Amino acid sequence: MNRNELYKRIPEIFRPEGLRQKKAIVIGAGSGGGRVATELGRLGLPLILIDLLGEKMEEHNIVRHELGYASLGKPKTAELRNHIHNFNPEVPIECLEMDVTAQKEEFRSLVARERPDLLLACTDNQPSKHVINEVAVRFGIPVVGAGVYDGGIGGGVYITRPGAACYGCLALHLQLDQGKTRKDLNIDYNDLNLPEIRSTAALNLDIAQIALIHARVALNLLLVGETDLLGLPPQVNLIVFANRLVPGHFERPLHAEFFHIERQPGCLVCGSPDLTIEAEADAIVRSLAQGN
Image (cartoon, rainbow, N blue to C red; front, side, top):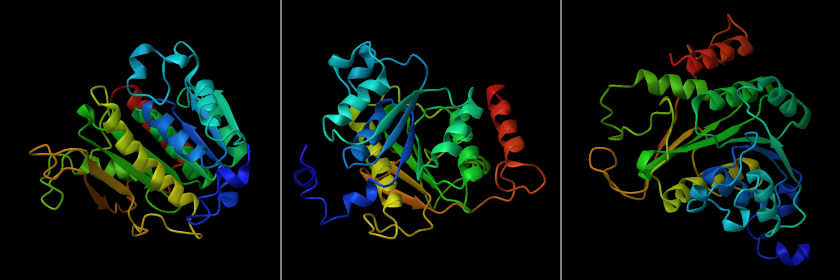
């Protein structure tokens, strides 16, 4: 590998050597997480890839995943590492099997030990997103997460930063707005408090669109202070993107809306001084697991 040749066209945009000194943990190696990891890994960002124990590529994954038939029946994270190394052989990538919800202590210990610059939430269920949020708040680490809406009609990308609204704030805010007419938004698919943000009917094109926004936002956070690749106001912490026109939901195709959700005093993670972050986060996860 000739590093100078590999990065030949990058220095006009940002310094790749700076990105190589940082680290991100990607939780979830599915169709979205795989693409986010690939885009950041090929630029030289050291990664830790986490997926569930025993997760392997299945045939129904292939039509929407970065990986293809050569990876069928093989562990997703290890195959994803090989895939990224095909673009950048020297980028450090560690693969772990872990259920961050069931193994919250192990996940917390991992983050405490590694102290990543960014957590990337690429899971498709709420309990895991809340565990990632709790650990991020505890250690003061930003998070960029995303979800593709059912049918692939669009998706949302959220950003949490230390001291600002956490994922619990976003979920609480959107839950309180359920049932209200949002004339200013004219969108009803920005509810991060759904039991599960599903993408079962989404095409690869639909997932890729949201995953690339996810990766771009993540890269921009990692490069803060050096360059700005987006030009978003710093207070923006939720992006809702319409892949296509859906009357009653998205009135414009290929269009993004940007929101600033304030830190919520009633947030169960960062808004109440009466209980510890850990106790509050545990209460959230227990409630979600019980279907409340």
